[in-house]
Image (tube, rainbow, N blue to C red; front, top):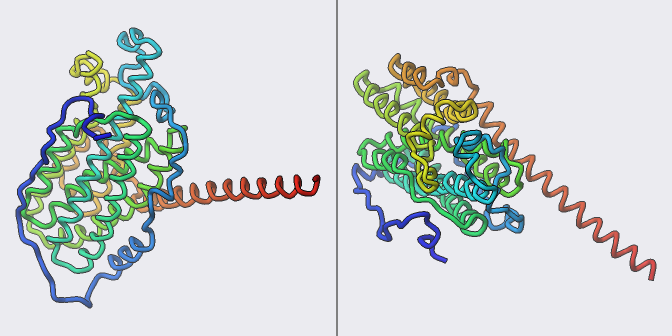
Length: 368
């Protein structure tokens, strides 16, 4: 089945063409490199995996409750709109909500794949080119698995959110080599990583938990890559150049905040999106969710040196300034450990099942 058959509204069948800008940079220095970045490159090679083998795709998913999360996560829960819905319609709303979230994940990962390839082309250092090449493969795998989940388990796909598309456009049409890092590795990937983490930790369904845990193991390396590259480079920039990057961060964060409201969902249910915006603003659950979504971006922006009073005021206005105190390294280590633990538990259970099967065969043979 074509993806276009699953979209909630018609999507242009032609490609979205973003003009290429900036230089493709070659370097003839093949020996020199930053040890930490080369170590990250080695880790990127070691941690490659196949989504058709590592993911247990035989796990069943109820399309009307794909994540098994509390209904309080839906902005209209407890309102007159919620009360008007039948149980069947509430199930359809859960399906639309999951479809919208995972569709944006899928579109964002395609953007990350294209951006990682762009970084290979434009970044001047060979060690960064090496690592970006492994990231390009990671992002291709992520597009693959989110696509499969939406096609096979949910059966519905939403078009790319316009705010996400705007940020991707700004990221890819800037000729400065560091801007794809800033737009993708810090803002888009940072927000996605936090969203993955929230859903990974609250979902009661094993398949989406697997998908998100394993993707996050990769993404932890990607954010570390952006931090390493930009932290070094931004120390060399003038105040005027830093201000330009700060402007980009401020605008990008507002785009990301507006993107997560999921207005497209409510339009499909005949609810005024502006009214839902107000519900989102007043929902304790949604405010907590929005705050957590910036838990990776804010400390990363601080770490790379874009921490002027203007940037801090932006985060204060958004209610996420306290996120600057988060230990980013600890969060990333935790992401890797959760994926490894999930592997260990799964393989132990499979081994126990195989042993039980063998024991049964032996017992039956002895009895006969």
